[in-house]
Image (tube, rainbow over all chains, first blue to last red; front, side):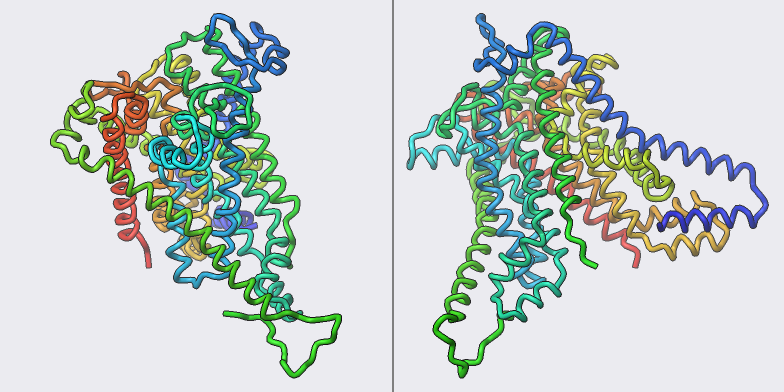
Length: 312
Length: 299
């Protein structure tokens, strides 16, 4: 819309002055160069897809789909090799579930408080403070989970030294701003008139939040949660450091588990030559991770736009 | 700020309808405290985390030579100079690569791009790339920079991988900054006979610099703190020299990870001390950016 006007203006200027040839060529070149910059992002995506799936193709020449998706043992580095990916998926799901159990209540309550209760001046300080949580490098959360949270929790409940619980809890804190920020924007977008209408019907502030504001912002909130899940699934350092490297199928959060990302980090440290099965295994797990996060991101985007309340 | 509708007490409620207004208001207060509590938990954890790291690491951080010596096999000796130098070089290369490309892409999308399917594809692409996990960028870097271009597990591979990782964030924030430039500026420039590029380079971009800087800082802070992608590209956990662009390399987060995984007790303190160094570096970066931003703001 804006753009069209701007182009029009430019074209009119073009028609009204005599053409200056060198200027014109420069303008064309600039346009091409800027387009090339924008193209880098497309090439990146293309590169990710081609490289990952090339190696994954090689992997599936050696290992059948059935071995990958139906076996329940993951022992690619042992003499008795098994390539069942379920233990890794289990580890990822378990730590992600714990993380979301933390991030959803903390993120939503932060968003509701900042939007509905906090004075603007207070919110201006508190919001960046909450955002800081996302700015801390994930290695730091790993350190804290392993050397502070785990020893603390072991006084209360029996835990293994490496466990899904500590890693999941810290991941949840890390993802809180993701859930909080996007939810906050969705809640902010609910027009005042809806709230006023609710108050006019004799409803209290809390009831207005639960029955008017949150339902109106629901699509944004759900989108933020899905995006949070995507972050948790792709998170690496915290789980490598604090959840350990034991691929197993379990729902016991006191045990050590291995996530998809943790396995990838573990095998990257070694120098597996290109073309070796270990190298291809890294890419096969990476391909699965990429597909899962991509699906979540697209789903999040779709939810946000599909169910958006139209306020006119 | 109770905006609820206070009923007149003179109205006697009938048997089948009582509005229970006091109870509902009390419930409201309880939940307000709950929401505040939820917000404060996150901040409390943050404070606890910083306190714990200072407690564990400050002593080691202040030992002479910690920032200037090369690592040693003993936790209480040596320093983290190679990791610091690595991280600084990584940061410089990432800025040099991503700022021109990112701002260029943002300018194209905001000022030049026609509204068609092709532009839509580029936009969807960028928003998807922002959600790709860091370790997957590592796989891309390993395939493209280590093998396809033949750099091997060198600093340049790591730097270019981090650059790709940072691009989406820079593009998105730069676009927002460019979109916020008032149209009147553009019209004024065209009105005086400037070409499109002249208008953009001498009016639109300078006006958008503070916003663009914010994005640059967010993404550089993230890149400097990222370890997963560098692990995949082949960063090493132990390095005794300052790396050049085409040599084996490490980075502060990798140094932290490598200290954490060592079993001897003293290494935890070395890890905490390295975390202090990393957080300080990120803090300094943000400080510099905020200073430049203040200088640039056009009133």
